[in-house]
Image (cartoon, rainbow, N blue to C red; front, side, top):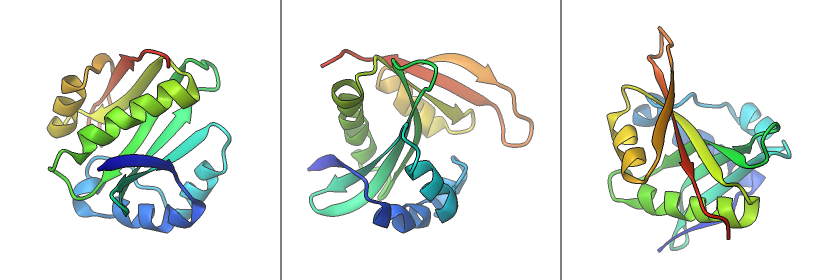
Length: 151
């Protein structure tokens, strides 16, 4: 069973380790432990640990917009093992958390154009592309959003 809990600062080294996986590094900008600690301490940041039974299998990083209290940036999901449907279930739980706890109506994210798996998943889960940012070195970033119902 997949469920989320608010992350503990003591879990940050595990999150750094998860981000260093070669497959993950192709799709995100990994943070150092110091960067994670800085973000963790920000009032508008929310780390959620993804649990399967009693085992940590990943995490989310959500960042509330300072300008728009109705939106949250879905900045990061890292999950292992991959390819078993855990991500879809975790995202559904994250959306419930965003509506019920953060009281937002909109979730947005960016994904590299070359991340076909991610793009497919976000489309499948009801996210719509709304903008593209051209970045020469890393590749283009595509921006997705989803409107969610309040609880």
